[in-house]
Image 1 (cartoon, rainbow, N blue to C red):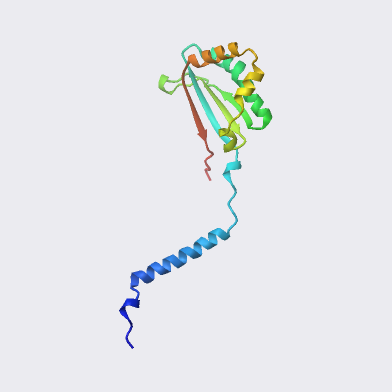
Image 2 (image 1 turned 120 degrees about the vertical axis):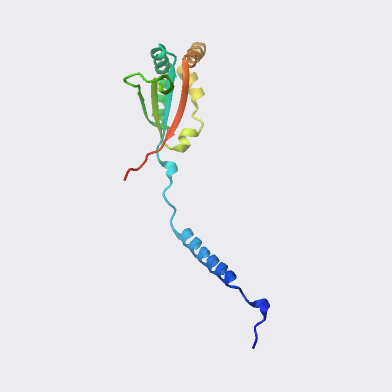
Length: 158
């Protein structure tokens, strides 16, 4: 009995069928596995770098402590931020690599870092004299040469 050539499968067609069958099997196994732990609940760290004009770093940090740090502390109290720290370099650097302060914020998670923080309401609550607050914040940014934010991630060395 001779086979109808229209019903023959070529070698490559059989190979495709095998690959498809294996893929479906692997996909089914993948869906049967419990979901991996979410990284969205892990603390999320951002470093904020500030470079002031020469001779104005002290004025910058004074204004930062007076006007911005209280807002950050309120967010620490609410649980949105888990940790606040600040450092400055001990020695000077070349102008192209210089920064005066690095403020590191550890947020509860990535969502907390990017969601609306209600900062405007906090600023109105903390600083009833909004004219003075606005003027001082404008001055704080006028004396900056550069500011950049760097979200960081841990790197395992093991």
